[in-house]
Amino acid sequence: MIVYTVKCANGHEFEGWFGSSSSFEREVAAGEVPCPTCGSTKIEKAPMAPAVAGTRGPSVPDGCPMSGGSEAPPCAGHCGCFPG
Ligand SMILES: [Zn+2]
Image 1 (cartoon, rainbow, N blue to C red):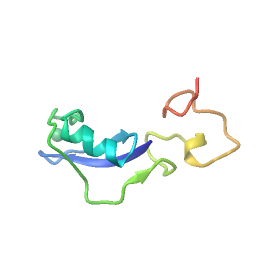
Image 2 (cartoon, rainbow, N blue to C red; image 1 turned 120 degrees about the vertical axis):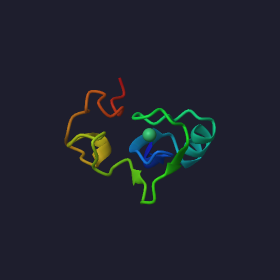
Image 3 (spheres, rainbow, N blue to C red; image 1 turned 30 degrees about the vertical axis):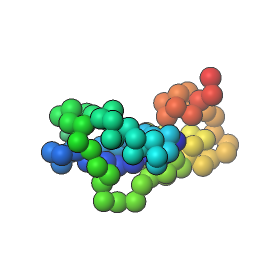
Image 4 (cartoon, rainbow, N blue to C red; image 1 turned 90 degrees about the horizontal axis):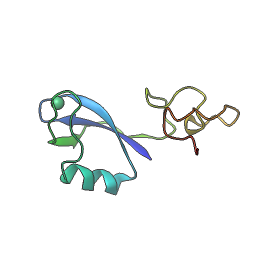
């Protein structure tokens, strides 16, 4: 999974989770990524480096295995990393 910070046509920035960069392109092109603020599906990648899984962010809690820590327990699904 990869997180992109994206921006809608109205300037709302938000994070979207995608399986890969190609999934991002496809889902955006298909209008499957609505802005949570205004619902616009005119989305583009925000002009900043993508936050690959492993970068700390609001979707990846501290200690989550996806954040790179190896000693922490699964995050119980909060970030989707929990295998169960
Ligand atoms: Zn918006």
